[in-house]
Length: 446
Image (cartoon, rainbow, N blue to C red; front, side, top):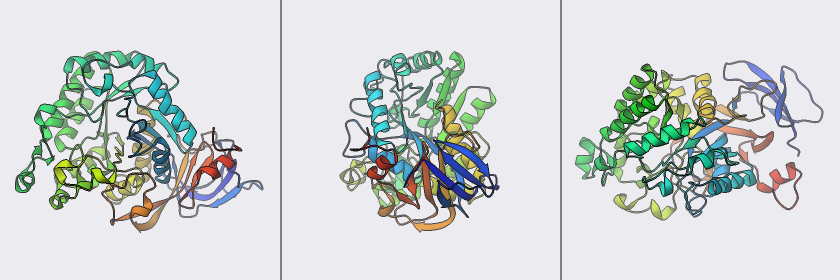
């Protein structure tokens, strides 16, 4: 089967209109009704939503250095099965993505995998140590063309260093993506600070530790006239700070994770380490504030913060367990449940927060475009009427630390197209051999 030409028949766009789409040569070559093409593979998309390929601005692919948790290949496969066509790979690898050489290595690994576009994120500081700036300019001018910089997992807590980073990236239209966590307020923190943390005897992670850093950083961004992106907003107060900053005209964007839109701190009561994450799961009031913030545009995007870990890092006592959840395979279904089914967003809004806007923030071309003639063939077919019990069989990456195991989730990704090739078809991830054959490669992809 060749993936050079596909005829998608009867797909519903996010605005409710129905269309056929002809994909050829990596682009959408025709759109309309009753299209025909004798040489194309026909896909019956009746009842399916056709969405621009999803873009994740916050993914941990772990390679190089932590291949026991994930690799660029396995993470790319997880992204494709979840409907993503682009992922931004966080810098906390070993060696850290703080030089042009390392980000170019990650870029090459993504190109070799071929399932999605893998765009490296550069570290803000050398070794994520928060002491001196990394080679920001060299990464920006490298083949990886880095525009997003983050020490995610660590806050750039030194205000002078954060100011210098914001000033530096301004020269090439970059953005600093901050992990907002005042470290002195979160020493030993295990969960959200509140009545429940007291009952469980776990050290609390106070909301102000997040909100105070966001407040500081939006003022720094205003002072230097640079772009700031706030990672994984998790509290009602943080939403208020971002809303205030935007009203003031500060160039700030913000993201929320699927898990912070759906899950609450009560899940921690069972001491199941799948629910241990940074920032922690918060109160029901915070979840509602996050949904409202996404609906009114205060929060710009949904980003997964996909964080795979080996089983032994999660299957242990709570205080010894690693922070993080996998999210690529489940993100679209969780967003469907949390904000579409609840009426906070419609499908056009979801395209904005999961595709168009993250592509814009990351300054990556050819992604997040509307499905019109001439646009790149980067799209996802999604069955919104499906329902499934999410299980380990739905996880194709190395990480199985999903908080949604045994939960019933709506929807199912039926096909994902990247660079004109079907990486997922009929809900099944295509093999490396199949993709190599489609591309006319022999002996594996080059």
